[in-house]
Image (cartoon, rainbow, N blue to C red; front, side):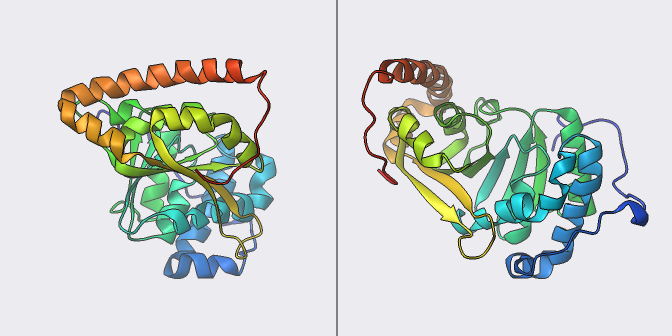
Length: 280
């Protein structure tokens, strides 16, 4: 994290012991986090205290932090390749990036977040959990972090309910390496969302696209994840144009695909809906 991106100010993440909620630890947490279980417990406590106080976690979510948030995010590790460079877009309170890092010590995670106060919280959490060598924070937005001379390309992008799928695909595409993977955590309507967005995602350059369920049979609330790969054909076309042309192409691609997505939705309102499919 550069000095320009580093949030100013300081704050303590050390609540008095009497104020720390006593949250029962699910037995499966030891299986998922292994030797890092103590760090996962500490992170959950921080979410329940400072996370709630700073408005990053709703107060009604405290009793559901383990199942609905921490474990639900950690199990997406099942879909992440070994030794991957991962960026968590719109990280907020560190979900899913921090649970993923705790569950997978082999991956490197960058938490991308536009709000300074959230970046400050994330930086303090990383220090409290002793994750500085594995996890970093960058203040910014997608796709700007993946465009321009300082842009970085990642192997995996994770996002949790950041934007509609067609818009999310457009802003994430410039941040990925050739054959890079987008893992978008969605809710119970994921198949319906994919049905609506499939055409736009394909036009943007995502192939294949499918839905995977992570943590099934292990956690109470498995994660439904849209898994999409940045098509190799698109990557090769960009490489022929050179880095500078590729960056300009990505910028135009984001604007063009967002516009095309709107037109596609408007045109499709009068068309009959085809049967749902889990993959292309």
